[in-house]
Amino acid sequence: MGVVPPGDGPGRAIYLDHHGSTPTDPRVVAAMLPYFVEGYANPHAAEHAAGWSAAGAVEAARALIAALVGAEPEEIFFTSGATEANNLAVLGAARAAGSGRRRVLVGATEHSAVLGPAFALADEGFTVERLPVDGAGRLDLGAVRARLGPDVALVSAMLANNEVGTIGPVAEVAALAAEQGALVHTDAAQAPCAVPIDVDALGVDLLSLSAHKACGPKGVGALFVRRGTRLRPLAHGGGQEGGLRPGTVPTPLAVGFGEACRILSAEGSQERARVAALRDRLQERLLAAVPGARVLGAPGARHPGNLSVLFPGCDADALVGSLQPGLAVATGAACSSGTPSPSHVLLAMGLSVGEANSVVRFGIGRGNTEGEVEHAARVVGRACRVLRGVG
Image: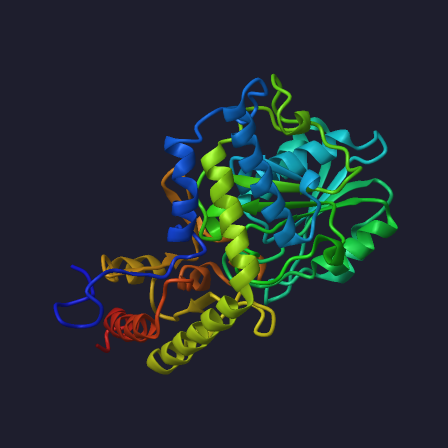
């Protein structure tokens, strides 16, 4: 049974998992539709006007994505999502490095889409090292400085953490890496809805993006590659995307991604402020409703829509399950092949296994309202009291 009884709160499920995926903005859908039913030509077909039109739409979208992050359009390469972009950045940069650069440094709280390819490089003779974080999930800059050297090919440091929302010190990491000639990659999948992005201010060489984390469509992402940065492609067989990522670019998805970026460029600052106010309201209500609850992440540098809360005495799986189907939130556990395990992010931050298994992540986004967060706080508070045996 769900936690939304008849007549209590909104009549529909409340979606608070915007870090998992965001709903596609209706304006994005409207921009995409013509390219499914009218502008369906292959954008790489150079022999006819229909192909030229599709190519023009793709290039316009590329320019909108570039504008969002302060890049040049020719530095943006379409991928199937941030996972592919991360793989291309990590594997491509390491493999293109000279023989004297055989070390790769990655933050301990990186997404598995970064950790996976990084540790795959170990099978190719690279030394891969995790960089420690503090209790808020911030990279230890002293450890970064100590481990950098002329043999480091790449450092990967996340911009906005997907679990606890901490905004990473990417610019500081990039400055340290530049002293040793190492490339810097940042997984920025969660970042467009969190902070303004400027690749020059960050000083990064590679930056990964995902459309569906920014109210765009699933199935498309992008990799910023600073001009002059050498990468080896992961796939072969076509000359698309400058030979770096072969395969037909999906025009509707690219257009949708571009429109999502246009909306964020125009409305992002106001949206972040509104979402942060909702997050703060939910945080206040939850901490009042659940004695001992504790907020994770960096208090002054956190994704405005992120609220990761440790509920002592409440198993997160049981809590989240009891909220169904009325409230969509996520636990702090990772699940691979159906086997849940404590989040590596939370463990790296110093939480015990028991504490990590009591963490719930709330992801607030564009469509949420004050009424929804108020209702969410009430039902979560009730559920925690039941699980603690005091309800």
